[in-house]
Length: 207
Length: 331
Image (cartoon, rainbow over all chains, first blue to last red; front, side, top):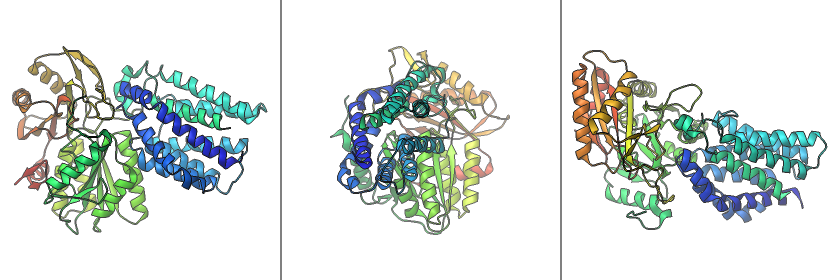
């Protein structure tokens, strides 16, 4: 399968996962946030799905950019700018590319991180998206360095991402709305870290 | 969930339609959008734009009009509007004197408004912003998101709006908004959570004899639960936290807002104010002006917040200046 088809497949899978886990993500957010993460992410990815034919006509960079802008304009809340900026940054590192190798994927993942950090001014350990994304990137890079194939590397990334989600249960939120709860946020998993783990999983499944 | 609604996905849009149909003399809704501007644009002045999630009515569209905002952008329920929407609002109200964004301190609001400001600045529009963070329930620290913007935001709309109406520059309007923010403190409590229509169930749970202290305005849980007390005891507690955070001297003058969260009757709000007044008087502070009512709601939450706003001569004049909006009118 050509790289573009894989990117489109990833977007389809991620969209499906956001619909599938809409309620669960919302429930998680109700526990420590304002209870709309699943609603907002599924609304955004639904808007992306409605543009599916249009996206298929574009090159990889442009279609990722379009997804980013759609998320920025349809999701709202904090997730819109965070996921939107992440996709916009990812689109920039693959500009002009029609094929993607394992290193390109690593660069894209780091661009996602860069987008989230720039927009959210957060770091790991604050109970945010980064707590699943950063360990996933580290696991992926480690696997690549160990000469593992890309699919296997992404499987390790996925595992690390979900471990990151588990880790968010043990820490206090210091960014986002959950930070208002202080110690009461301990014991709950972060919905943003969770949706990001699904994103990593979607990449893995699309490969 | 029992609400007077039709299809859940149409809640916001149908409210927008009703609002613009009800008050055509005050606000105009930009076509097919969630941007509300004044029915009559005033040229040559600094324009004020605010917004946030829906569910806080009359905030924020209810504060668009003479003496307050020039545009408001309500997003989905409890969800910040998106950058493109805020950008449209900025473009619509700018008349060359610059635009001030009044943002409540929530991660999403700050990010979306910042992106909008970047888009407008790229067009050459002068944009400044202030972030309201009046909620003393939340620990303020460099390492957290910081204090939330809650009911005190209405005072920021009021004084910045009055200042802009006088023909002040963007820097001057921003300075007075920041002065207001520095002198505003709010804390609230809730008896019953709100239900976001799309979620279909309450945002948190409270037992029959429990109340939530340090509540925000988005149905997010407060800092902790307590056993329900009589109103005077609750006021004592909230006032203690608020006053501890303010530097007041004997004779300090205060504007006071007792804000209802949507499902608390005025009867209870006045009972609250009675005690607030008593405590302030006893401490030697002067109540300059009082506002009691639903100014910044949380859909159908039963709750209230107390806002103290320390005012000097300039702020007193701006608080008292005329305003004509849906949610706040004084002559």
